[in-house]
Every structure is written in structure tokens, then in C-alpha cells.
Length: 395
Image (cartoon, rainbow, N blue to C red; front, side, top):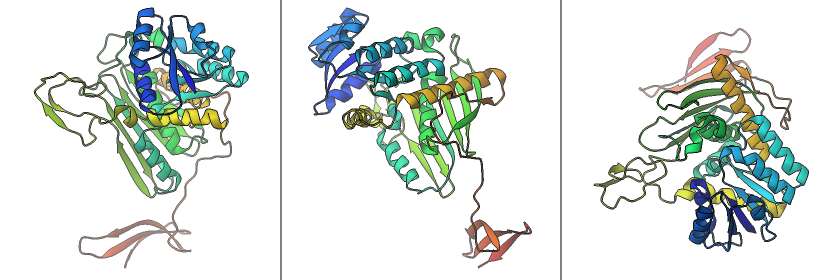
């Protein structure tokens, strides 16, 4: 498959590094940038035969099969529209839109054009995440009760992120989109998010958007998805996930502290990892960054999906649902109340209700807890199914 890249900045280079690292038939052939100089530099760096500052020229290139959007948020809608008109499969970086309404437009464009819309949510493709998700789906931790995801760092690299009109928000739309989709996967993407409680503030930076936020998303089955996001965290990028189930727990540390520690006086001034704030002292490098962040598995799934004529694991519909949850988070941050998630086109289950499943010990009792005491004795805490009496039984 031949690929066109829209954008020549930070995320475009991450994507290109991933694509260039894989010895496969999918290759970059063209790049668009609003700056001809940056487009030419990108093309030279990655050995591309074509570059342009004309978006329609790049998208409409007959040699191009699929387009990757690595542009700032305010340009996503127009770029997707151009791809849909040209009949090109399109893969768009996160967030899909600045709002749910904008994301819905993009989703409807690709569906009407009959092309695939892939949502480039890389953190749902990291090796640790994929293995954890497989364990959850296999029932290893039982029924998921709570899924928490955290992404914090000192703030984004480009100026447009800090402009509310261009980005559509602050840390919530930039980082919360990752955390929300991670939790959705663990909880089940067919389970409807129903309401959101969110706190957000501008604590450090002189901007119109929030630079720090916490949020709780309640799902139809009663499970809670929690996100913690900040542009105020000092010391690098902290990516952590936690899933609590009725039969087990998963903790993931994807970045910052991954078992690779290094000390340097700073000689050489080498690149350490994304969002690293220093190249001296104790450092926490990341071995294969594009792989650890999920880019390799993400693009493999996207291109396989196009060839197999199926939906990718992360689609434009997923991006739309995430944007709808983010909309509710912003409403909640203002109202300080639980706000409903408004999804006009829900495609998941509608038969799910909030309920509880209690473990039976026998026909007469529920099992509350089983425990081994320090002296080696074993005890049970039971609840009578009829009377409700809680009793202790020693074994």
C-alpha cells in the first residue's frame, strides 16, 4: 500500500519512523505541509519521491492508496473531507475532532464514501496494553469494576495545542482522549458510557484551556472509567493504567519508569524519550519508543483491516464516541455536576443495566471473603441469602 502523510511535524515523524522501520510492502510516497520547506525536508529525510504544500494534490495523487492525517486538530475535518471526496482510505491522529459533532461529520463522510476511517489511538496498541486486554477478555480478572488511566507530562510541543480555538481544549482533549479509550477497551466498547463527572482547572500556564483535569465516566453496567491528565507534571511523561476486576487486578507502567534507568552528567546531550525534561542526572530512556507507544501494531492493524475489508480495532466511530465523552467532561467541569453523555448514533448494546453479581458459597450463603490468618487458620465471612445475617466460619 502506498501512503501519503498530511503533516510534517512531531507526530508525522513518529508515524514515519514506525512505517519506515517495518520491512513491508506499505511505503510512504508523498507528504503535505503548509510549508514547502518543511515538506521538502520531510521528503528528503524519509526518501519520498513527492512533496507539496497543496493538500488536494497530495490526496488526489493516483499513486496514493491511503492517507495519514498528522495535522493540528482544527485541520482534521477539512482533511477528512478531501480524502472522502478522493475516495482514499484515511487514518487520522487523535483526537478525531474537537467536538462530538465535528467527529460525527468525519465519520459520516468516510462511511458515505465507502472508505475506511481508522482512528490512530496508539496507546490502545502498546504491547503491554494488547496483552492486558487479551487477559481481560479471557476472564482472567473476572468482571471489570474500575478502569483508570493516567497521562501527565510538562505540556505539548507545538504552539497550536495551547490555542483553545485551534485545539478544542486543553489536557482533556489532548490526553484524556487516550485515557478514555483505554478504559473503554477494558470495560467493553459495546457498553454505553452514560454520564461524566469532571474537575478541570488552569493551574500553571497562562492559557484559556485547562492544564489539569480528573474525570469519572460511568457506564451502563455500573463500571467506572477514570482519567487523570495534566500538562503540569514535571519529570517527563507518565503513562499508567490500572484495571480492577472481581477476580484480579492489572497495573501497567508504559513510560517513565519501565526498568531502563541511566545516569549521565549530560555530556553528549542525547535524546532520551518523548517529553523528557533533562539529559543529565538519572534518566529513564525508552528502548524502542515507536513500538512501546503502539505505533507498529497500530499501523499493522490499519493496513490489514483495509486489505481484509474489515473495521480496524480503532475506527472513526470509536473516535466519535470518545469526543462525545469529552464533550460531557467539559460540560461537567463547568456545571460541577454529573453530565449525560450525548451519543446520537449509539451502535453498542442497549440491553445492559447496572447490576451486581455476588459469589455463592453454597445454596444458603453468599461468600463475602476468604482469608488465611497469620497463625495459619483459615476463615470465611459469609452472608445468609435469606436473612442477610453476616457470619464467620472457621475452617
